[in-house]
Amino acid sequence: MDRKTYKSLPLLDKAIIQCTLCPRLVEWREEVAVTKRKSYEDQKYWGKPVPGFGPSDAQIIILGLAPGAHGANRTGRVFTGDSSGDWLYRALHKQGLAKIATSTSKNDGQELMNTRILCAVRCAPPDNKPSTDEKNTCAPFFANEISLLMPTAKVFVALGNLAWSQIYSTLTEMGETLPKPRPKFGHGASFSFIGKDGTKRLVLGSYHPSQQNTFTGKLTEKMLDSVIKKANSFR
Image 1 (cartoon, rainbow, N blue to C red):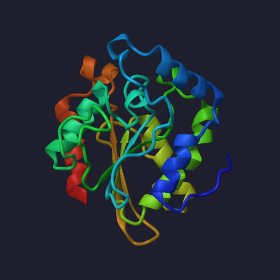
Image 2 (cartoon, helix red, strand yellow):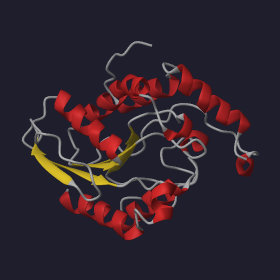
Image 3 (cartoon, rainbow, N blue to C red):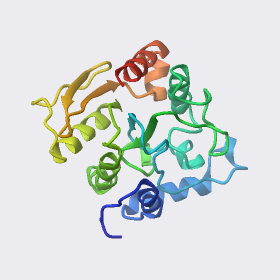
Image 4 (cartoon, helix red, strand yellow):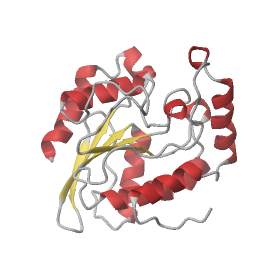
């Protein structure tokens, strides 16, 4: 597949879903879709790259790491079908940014308002750790999607350090003038910049709502709510 730039989100989403550029990720995501988790053994897994979810004119852009093996890799919708998604959609619902407080399948009636969610890497990686080459291979999709969203984007919420680094490097490569050196990631960390189009934009950091963070108390519901509330109030 060539690395051309797609001029609309539907065209980009289609290209993402069809991508087979990373052999290790292709093998892993398809293997998981066949072996399945016992609790989902009666379900058909998506087993393909996962596109973004939400309107094309969103002002709030939520950035994750990669699809969960038995979450988005199963359901086909980003942050859907696992506990990370439960945390994120609940927080979005509280701010009126999600139609319902849960996201369990592509057919559950969920809708996002003024918000779009995407990941830096579009395939579920083994141990949730994509390689540097895999991140670099997927980066053009990320940059293409950010570029398409820029006309309306006001706030970028980076869930985790990788998403924080990725949005910083992507915006820099797009010619945006950002603070230097790159601000350090942390929960509640933020920086603002004036875009080339004269729009003031904000980048917010949050710990990822992974089980590793939520089970240990590193991320609490109140902490996540605070970041989403700040993102919603900025726009």
